[in-house]
Image (cartoon, rainbow, N blue to C red; front, side):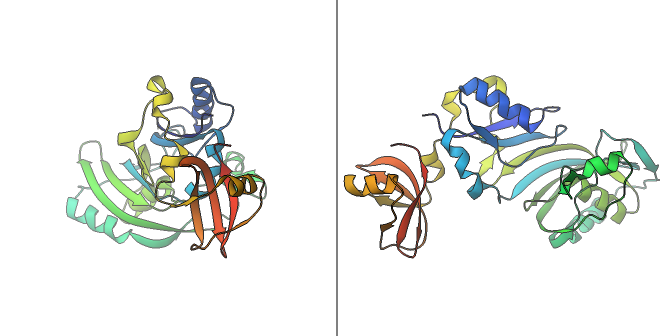
Length: 283
């Protein structure tokens, strides 16, 4: 059974769902799903779960992320990225590195952020960009996010562009961050380029393009769960476990790797000394 995760380096102008469809075809699997959507214009790390590993998504969706972004100053676009229509222009003065670093530092920490009006977040059953395209105004609730760190990568005085790295929590919109940053330095701006370099423990260094993807790139569920505890079951207890019977195990609550005769079976959840099957890879 082909189950595990592949770390894709998504190319520009491809949707996350298109990548999933191609992964299914290349690896010849029926089930697959991505962790953390990447906009079509963005590139970089897109983890794709395949086979029974798709059930792991509930444990992986809360991952922190790291991006490399470029903000173009002096121009504001309705979508907040390079794809939109220009809605405002403003002057841009000399880009002082110390001032920029200070502003970025001020933007770090826990805060509330509203998703961009041109995003796929749903409100009342409709995606925000559907309201925006029709010119309909709607109140967008703010979410709790955290910016862990920022770092300047490049300042282009001629083009009035700044590239930076940002480590942030799930749910952070870099387009919004870029617009807010531009306002804080006294102008307007939009996100010209975005590359995701890390999702949780999955890094761009371990990513592969679709053109080079094959089964050797599949990371097993056992390896994904290597930091969890281990429980060994005898044949009788294994049979009960596979049939959904809760087993008494004297260990701490948590997620555990389950084995039978050193063979990886899957994952179980232990709560109040009762082990319940969660994900079965091998029967």
